[in-house]
Image (tube, rainbow, N blue to C red; front, top):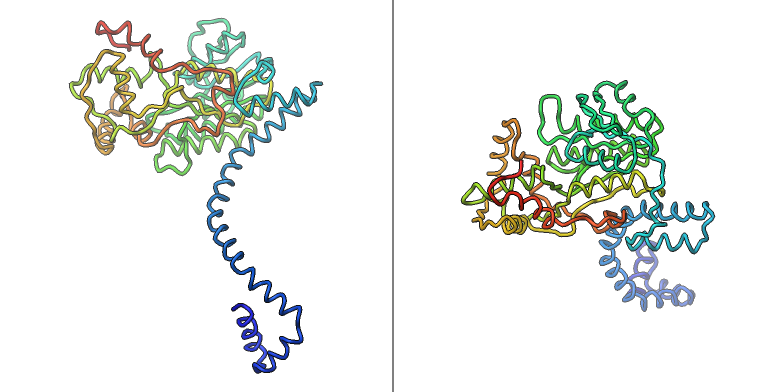
Length: 417
């Protein structure tokens, strides 16, 4: 019993005999009562210890959740302050917060009257960048499309300029006088000094730093779902490190992470279609269970334009994905069905794909790369805990609908280029 253990402990320390200890015990009724109480409480204490053991992992999970929710909670406080400062009633501000919490959108919650007279888009001639440029131009914004080589201006609302990431003066000139900046530069195959780290981390940080020094109001950095600083993949790791570098260089930068993007001129759907049409048996990545949530690239561009124009403070991170999640095998069968094909699918280990991609990268325009193989080994689906299209009032288009328009003109045997 607990009281006997306590008495023995006192005796051991003090050197008193049992008789002496018994006498002390009788002369200390409050101490005896406390010992009795502890004895009765012992089962409760033991149960509490068990409950804490069960609760400990939940506490850790809760901490992680608050790391995610914390920035969003701060933004909700900013929303309340913003609306009250504009003369709105607390009730109106509360309605706005409720809309943000459940992901719904109202005209008041997403005013797009922020002044964006000029926006600089780095990588403005690329797959995503040129669509961002077009969406901004269509909304009446003057755009600077920045690339390594100056292009011909096809529209009076678009200024084509050249800038070298190694030349600080050209970077400063590219952002001068702009209200917003978008970094849409990405790299899929390393060439010489153009490495994943130099492009996704160093160049991104230089652009963000130049934007901050120029007093730019809003900065959007395009990354990708799955970006992870702890990844063993140089490509995936550089994406995560690039996000961190941008957020360090430009406080308040907005990170946009799209899922795998598709369009009629992409290197994703068009490659799959060509291979499905030309090969008697189609080799698939691993066991075909990797999950994807493909997104239409024009929807991503529209979301970025919307983020730039938001009157209220945007969220720090958006993950943009399509309306449906597929396993890779389901995706292939969906594409084949719409294209009127019945392929034989053959599972191949990722080691085979890595070797094949290494050979493909030697081509001027590789159909796929090793970094794409690495991405196919992880699920690239949007997190339910991060805002996406719904928070911007955009309904993303389905792959099936867009694929129909891509495949229809090619059912006579002409493939998309």
